[in-house]
Image (cartoon, rainbow, N blue to C red):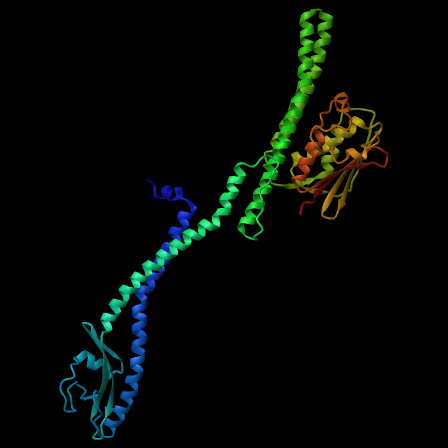
Length: 437
């Protein structure tokens, strides 16, 4: 079995406990290995301090021609005793080290000895090696025994850390487990209880509640969108079917031609509705193409030029300089075309298009002189399939999707949309887009 896969299949509590126990054990074992050396070093420093005082006093006696008290020894520079005692048991390497002033540690079995030395000139001018030392009883054995006991203590301490971690993680995850169970049985529209503790669990509950709110909103929007789309599709499909059945039942060439013209009209309406639904479906995917500088004035003029011939007067008021918005050419084209198409349906004689700088934004205002939008409808005209009058869109060929697409494209670029009353008494639709920086 793959170790990584096996590890990832374990519970979070198990993994945290194993990691915490392993880290504690390794840390304590490392301390166990270092502790004897540190303790021995502290012990040697204390012994050296005592030996140094003794060596200073003995060196002063030798320089004055007196022999120091045992256990200090006086040797010649070759290591032979000159104080009348027996051999000091120092080899040539040890003698050289003591003559250089370096301390010497000799270990044998469980005992050890620490020596300090220095060269002193006697009154007759002969150099003498003065050495002094102490036996460190049980030095090596104590280190070995101490290491064993520390290792045992490290294992026990790591075990206690593991138990404490297991209990602590279980206690900490208990609210999360309760939250998981509650979320699984949570009815639609309800939210998880938010704990009073200001910790990660509270933040998780708030985040999950936000996710549930977005889920319910998306579900409701999808349900409404699906129902409205089915309703809108049913009308042209039913009309085409009914007229086709009538044409089949009454095979009159003149009547059939009239039926075919009506079928073509309904088919065009159906095709336009499907195209609008596809555009909104792509916009709902959340994919946001990178923004680029787009000249709003040029696109407004191009949209005016694309409008079908009519008696309407379309006027553009815009600065002579370029007005760049942060969007894509396709988004700006769709927004301007839908706004002008909407105004063209309801205007009587005049449509005014204005492009106005507004700080870090650009305003696109489309006014018409139609009968306007009532104040109670202005907040909802950008909803999908919403119509101010139930039969208004069907009579003029609209579906209630154009302004919804405009709002979606503008808002996802952090812009705003607004419906108001035009100076001519008709409808005013205002778009605010972030300027390109």
